[in-house]
Length: 392
Image (cartoon, rainbow, N blue to C red):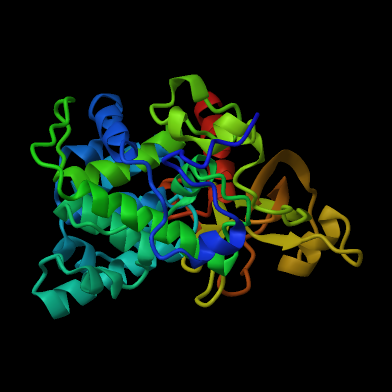
């Protein structure tokens, strides 16, 4: 398709001139179009029914690298059990990990509690309103601070997550990699000018009940996220339903599928483990991951990564527990952590005599296991055991 004429409201700039621009060219009708669309298209999400900054903060941390449909039941349970900053600050670690069990990236929940304790100590338990104070909280970056400040307090603070990056790179035909420092800062400039342009809007009304909105800055930022999540999707975007398609340069030029240009993906690495469900007299052998490692504090069944020197289940069992026993195949659990594609080959092992396991392994009764926070893959193993026991 031909490029838009020079008189177009949206100037398609070269990479060099675009980066040098102090104020990106934004069509005058773009912000009203986003606000009007969000007023009628916003999804009914539970954290959109409140302006409590604590509740909004928890939702934003949970939503990092996690889908909305997965987060909803976690958020609802969390708010029932830890309804405010003070409750979070005082909660035992194992309770926090159990509430977070299955969401992954457990550093997030540890930082949530550190931040809550900071709020109690520094802000008398009241969630701070100042953007810089929000940004200073452990685990809160530029995006999260902008989301909380705009959604809870209607402050003109910009946001830039994966959904917003996709909307902006397509609308403004930004072909450089968004991870590049200069390009990323240009995207932040665009996001800033959009939310600032929304600030003067008066009498903005969200026409969906029971959703609550703090004002046009909140609506603008949420409209960008919502558009990227529901319409301007990574694959098969619904351009004909897009409220800003007339402004979208990538749509006019047939380049939607090319953007954003995230560069080549990191090569996936396969890893395999032998995992053992060891049973004696109705009890099972489990271990808690130590401090300072991934998933610290969570529980799991004994396991060992397969190497060339330890390729059989019997050899792995001997290395782990200094015991020789029959290994019966139970199941295979496949999951991913960042660039790793992991397979857990799970075996059931019954031992005749009560062995004294090496620390920190422990024998626990079946009724004790569901109360412990397990890693995601090992939680799936536990649920399989529970289903098997129920059917026995």
